Length: 287
Length: 287
Image 1 (cartoon, chains in turn yellow, green):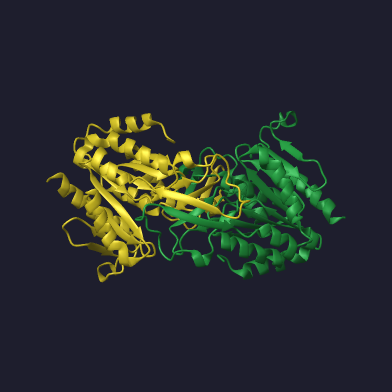
Image 2 (spheres, helix red, strand yellow):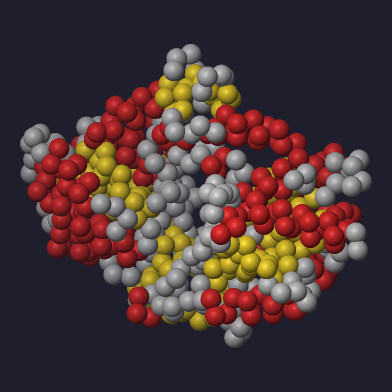
């Protein structure tokens, strides 16, 4: 665990008064699976954490408390909009700086301060930490019951190597090649839904590169884990198109390239995702 | 290739006048080995690129022209000293900002501008790009002959998967596990030294986690590839201690925890590495 459990406790304690508050646990960024105990090499899942970071902003702006459980050094709400900030600064005397090309910087800094009390940032690196910490966080939030949303945007490894089978030191390359035996990683989603927060509103993502398996695999996940929503997306079009998959409902696409959004060039797909989730979550709470 | 070869050409053309100029090609950050063609997963070598980024500054400040060949989004000279800059800024009216806790920010921005014309930043992501681009860059710089230093600070994968054996789509996890067959990656260092820039002053790094193999493996590398220097270091102490390994010379350690440096709390080990390399490179040019 890379963070102090007291921080989580005091965040939750601070916000207990509002009995109608909704809270979301967002996972963001990719997990790392170490190939050695003293880790030089690891298997990475691709994710900068853009979706998670933007989603956190939208949840905040829609009234949610946010626990942002993210890969250390992945993108964070608001700041991710200003990469390479150092190269945009110009000294302007007396410890003052001007900024070129980032007209919304001041506004976003203010927004960050506005919501600072309503978001808690907790980092992870390895798959093991991801799994254990997420269970811990969900358990700690279980009192929110149906008002808890778990929004699993992180890219989590499907495979890993058991800790006891990891070599102690850097793998040596002398012997002509390397055979890695990976086993299927335990399904975090299953335990979250069945054991930890069975009442929560759980949203998972399914990312594929082969369109022919996407919807089918998403439906299978809903059936298997029994959670509320899979948001299905393709690696190459994930910023323009997603499809909501729910049990007993037709797939519901959001497509920024459809005529509906022709006038809205600036809209981010996460804004539409969270607007829709907010409604569905609200309905879910009142059933 | 993630960059335009014309940028390299015009950088080199711009600096041809100085017949005594030394140039260094620095590699920095880790390589990625994709496990799929449409890449969701890959094997990563650990490296933020701190050593490469600081080394680039020190080479610049020691009069070198610098080609900084780095993993995209890894740390860069000067800016790496100010992580999380967004959270240090405060709006101060009229597109001005003040900065907390970063007293050297203005100075480093000025230093960046001072050397901007003498450094070229070229990015890579995959092992394949690393290998091919580095050969291209070395070839383009070959005219510097002995005045070319190649400083291989990147963490390069020892293993990879041949492109023709990569699966087209994201590996599916249905079948109970995953066997990855990795082959030893072609030794970029060998080709650099033997084929591309046999006259250059070539410095490689050897990072290990097991101290018992470090010096022996470094000596073996010198013998095998015939280059000038291996800088040997351990993963855990790499910011405090390195050892220069050369053919027919005793190992030469630099240890920031030795009494010699007791008074210099702020010194960065890269400053001492580059000071020493500058001398050795100068001797090498005059042999």
